Image (cartoon, rainbow, N blue to C red):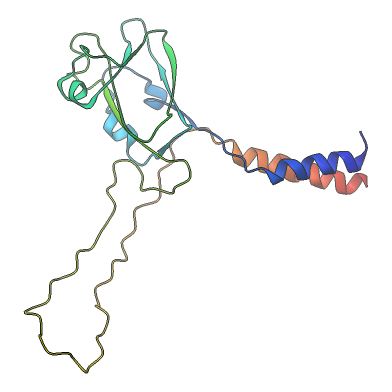
Length: 193
């Protein structure tokens, strides 16, 4: 393949935005089992549409997707979807909260349940578990009925608190490797031509 064709192909690839999903192994090394605090596991992570939750578990466990009410009561009576293969990849396809429990008796009530907040892929939201910081202005005293001739000054109250940066999630990121590969190819093409 000649150099100009390769260069043209690489430029074409760069013209299209690359979006990569992240696979989150639920519980990381602990996986989907008893004795894991899944609320702590989700904190600091931002789950986006297009990402996947990967549940890895042994034969005594399963994964049921349930609604909020069944999540809170640890009930499998209205299961949305059941996963029982031991290695279940659940695509996150819409924004909002999604709930999972282990339907084995006693497991959910012992903490084997997961709540995930999924955000749109194009936004930069606050990490799950961290509410956005807002500042409510202090109400002024009795409003004046006569117009003021003095220009108003902006409030000295400003909110400089920003959410903490996301913690390392342990999720596999692909985009950095692709960028390095593309840069390497351009360098190689420069030496060839």
